[in-house]
Length: 158
Figure 1 (cartoon, helix red, strand yellow):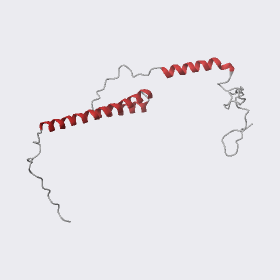
Figure 2 (cartoon, one colour):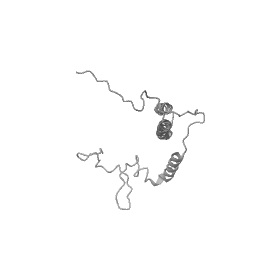
Figure 3 (cartoon, one colour):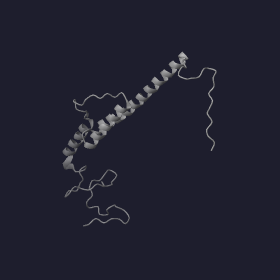
Figure 4 (cartoon, helix red, strand yellow):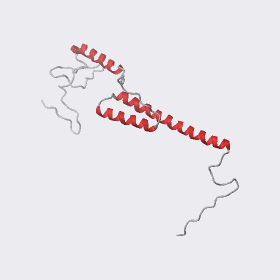
């Protein structure tokens, strides 16, 4: 018998291919039954062992540490350009399927933190240099004495 669709929806009206498992509140499981069987994978009593093995395998896979191989060279990451190179390399490894997504996500996240630290370090160095100049009161970099003024050159009339 062909499944008929309720008008305007994608819900099949034929329930013969649905799992026969009935919950405590007397509602039926909405999943498709396995071919030739009355239950879906999750409610078939004959598959208790397989479900337990699948849960165990899923838990092991989820908790397994994913690391890069030991032969991956150490990268110097002192400048924004160094970090950009690492990110470009990581993106290409992800695209080729050579690196786990969890590792690439960690690299991306840590790269953002490192770039922020590099920027702050650069600003601190520049501020320290300005403070040193102001502390010395050494204004020799300009061509004006303390009491001279700077005259603007008038622009041409339009």
